[in-house]
Length: 451
Image (cartoon, rainbow, N blue to C red; front, side, top):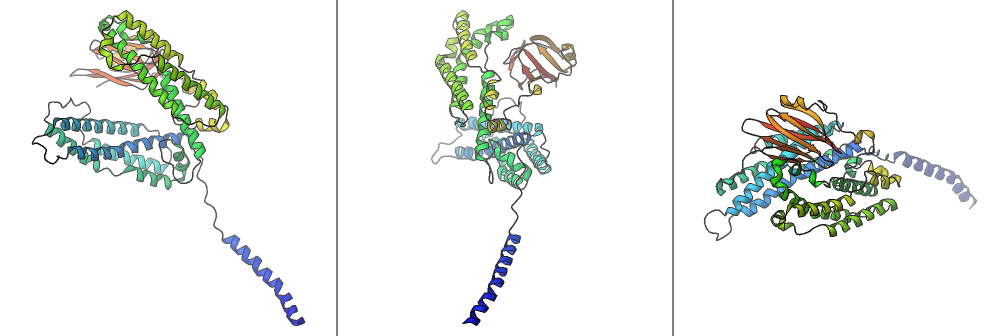
């Protein structure tokens, strides 16, 4: 008995040593946790948002043709011939594809480089693929095809649909890129238009989406036209005959614009940040009240346009007064988000929100300054303060600037452009293109070229 106890006593230290060694061995063999991806940056969130929206647009085109094919398939027992409605539907599809591909092509080519080699290679491949598709589409400026037989319109739609069908689905390729590129993951997961991958901070993502929506809403409110009488129809006798129609359209469209803003605001969930939620609630209440004051019945545009010009001016003045009452100050939203550090950080990452820096409030520099005479050569970049008469390659324009738009008038018609807007005038020999590079107050910077 004594011998057995002695033996057990001798084994105990050895057993403890073995267990300790086993524990050390287990700790040494435990896998190292993966390195977290780099934090999100504003530049890469914007890059991700842009790529996601363009990929969605490309993939959507594929789905639209699948729907069109169902419509174009002959119905059992249908009478011989082609339904003209289908010809029109096919024409609309072709126009939609051309516009969408042109939009994607332009956006991708103007995309600010991400600085991530794998991402740049992906974009380059996508640009090449979209460019090849564009080469197989009709010209953008092609005249309406209403005189083309329905059979030809349907055949053209099918041809273009076959071109679109050859594009590979783009979202899986984008997902593979992000999953294999740690530098993109955090930013991609915060972009509102991107479906997040892997683990992500849903709270931050929600705040970024809220900030983006609120910045878009603020931009829409600030862009509301509160000076309808600044249009050339009231300042240039050549266009006085269009004044009634212009005012009628202004009055009729106001309620639609404000209703859309109200719906957008009302759909946003609260952030849980008291200052921000109170601001959103106040703004929503004001916009909803404005919808009740604005004229309805958009369908009576022709009848409204035939009313005396004095009555239309008075009604337009009331509409402008209502719109002015819901325009926020540019500092209102930044002040609301600044009440919470987490929301402020999300705001500074949000694609639609420009961080409040001096550079963001400045207009781009015009290469030719205010020297409108430089435009006579057919190409210029000028700053217009208030209004100016500009001659370009034999064309003469009157340009007037308001806080919400740039009006360009010519004997052949009018152009109304917002910030970033583009338009053109032309004849068989020349086309003058105008683009608004920047708009602030009654000052605008325009790029003008001739082709």
